[in-house]
Length: 147
Image (cartoon, rainbow, N blue to C red; front, side):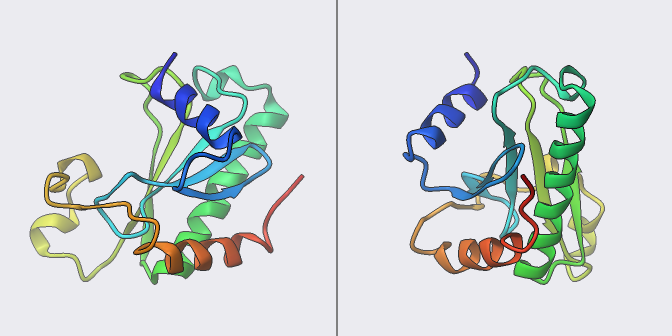
């Protein structure tokens, strides 16, 4: 069982404070480390090993939810773009990372991929501190939720 499986189980039980929204394909959650304010993940439910393990209709739902979450991140954070990443090499379970990015980032950081950023000094997710951001994300997503 991967960390993704365990997190989806916590979400199903209502025990994950990082919850943003339940979407058609799974769960939108805040990153536990906010290396960029508004960093989110999309976790499928049920969990599958990788994107190609989904049948085409479920794959389309996951990708549509991913881009809808990206749109919500743009609106909620004022970011200029979103970096999307799906790997699953260390945690062999489908999950998408969504990182807001700004043109105002320092020259040194602007071209870095998200894992090269300073995760050690990044703020941790805190329910009280991030409540307004979650509210803005939910408000944007509420008009986009598919069944």
